[in-house]
Length: 255
Image (cartoon, rainbow, N blue to C red; front, side, top):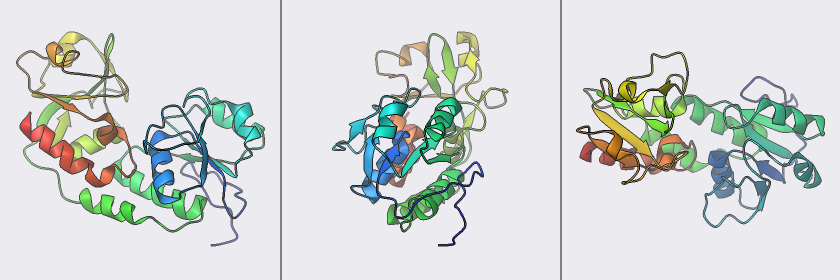
């Protein structure tokens, strides 16, 4: 590697001491990616880092309220954050505490592949994992046609949906969906019940961040096909991408 400091997704030079041996991840998708690719490197993660299931590391609260003092006590070589998942104020607090932080920015599937490749090679100083190439191959095919007009709620009371410039929105496009609210200025717009149903041919209900189930969600979409899907398949940009397209495509086809 070059002697120059590596640069994270936001263009910030990050002074990383080599070799990287102790990592704290505050991003569930990337926690899974690091745990599977670099066993033993993770020393802590958030409560929301649910994969891999057998992950046994210390939990330093959540993505929006990390325990900065405890993270500092763990003396990590690097903390992994994400521009959307984590707050800027927490990134600043970590850096003010003398902790080295790498920030990712992921709003498309291609950005996910580029960001994760940079994370492993430039930040962690390891080889690009094989599963990343497998995931790229899985998502290389063009989207099916014709596109289906769809809505992807992420919350209810009030209803909030996936909109423009989002990873889930780009992934949905690759699955052959046209999000009817993607022309709104907000990335996750709030919509009324009437707006929620307008022009929709398919409702895709993930199980996170809101846990949509058979009894909570489908009843809001009378006479509209509904696909209940894994939120991890739809919104996580880690190893799940290897098989997510096949699972999601099957579920959408059957809806």
